[in-house]
Image: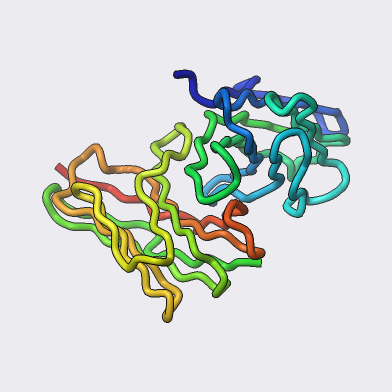
Length: 114
Length: 113
C-alpha cells in the first residue's frame, strides 16, 4: 500500500514569510507525528496527533509553529514569520496508534529560508 | 527530557566484518528502543526494535541488546554488506510516553567491499 507522503518535497522561502507543509499518513493510522531533522542530526520531535487532536505539542520550538489535523488524516504544519534557523528537513511519520508501534516516516520536506 | 547518546559517530568496516553501535539513555522510564536506518537523501526506516521486557532480539544479521540497569542498548550487524552502508539512529521515548522519541545523533556506517 501507499506509504506516508509529504508535499512539497522542497520549499524555498524568504525570511518572514509563512509556509505550510502537508503530510498524508498511511490510511488507517490514527497516530501522526512531525519531526524536524537538521543536517547531521537525528530527527527532533515536534508534535504528536492521536486522531484529530494534538495530544502532545511539547516539541514545538515556539508559537510561530502550529499544526492541524482537522479530519484525523491529512496534517498541515504551519510556520509563521519564518527565520533562517527554521531551515531543515521536516519529517512526518504515522503509526497504527501511539503505543509502541512502528513509526513510518515520509520522505520529508526540505525547507530553506533565505 | 530524554538524553540519548550514540557512539561512534562514524564507523568503517570491511565487508563481512561485524559492526556495533552503542547508545545510552537517561530516562529510566523508557521501555521501547527502536533503531532506524537512513540512506542518503531517504527517509528513516525501522530495522529493529526492542521492548524492555527482553534483553536481546535478533532478526537475521541484525540484533539489538538492552541493559536496563546500565541504561544502554546496542545494535549489532554481522556479515556486513555494502548495502548496509547508511546512517543508523537509535531512539528512546521520553516524558513517560511510548511515542515521543528522542533520537541519537546517528552513526555513519561505511562498509568497504
